Image 1 (cartoon, rainbow, N blue to C red):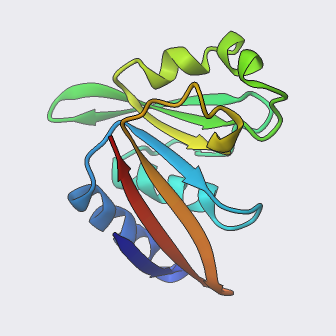
Image 2: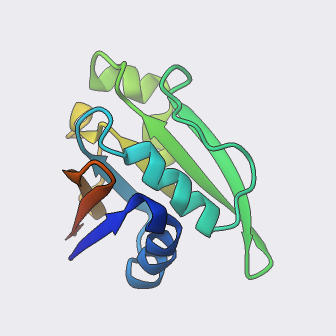
Length: 141
């Protein structure tokens, strides 16, 4: 599945994404500055998260909560950019988040190839122009 999105339509795109894509673990691939965190912010807004969503570059994991059908749900936002190896990710609790059953957004997933669940959704974000990105979505099982 591919989606071409302009920055001024990102919230609409996030709502569309949630209608079309079901999953728990989302691996976001893209170069630095491609818009991974920007799209994750929009996905969180679409779920009703009102708190500040920022990249957990130094903390590794941010946790957000929202209500869905009267039930409290969690989203883990994981940024692996600064990790040295998979063992460091495991010690930081990344594996616990990935297999918790909660929604997980993982930036720089190529740092933990053997830790990532086989069943996941890969989201490749590719610059198309200054304010437009191409999202290539691959359903892995």
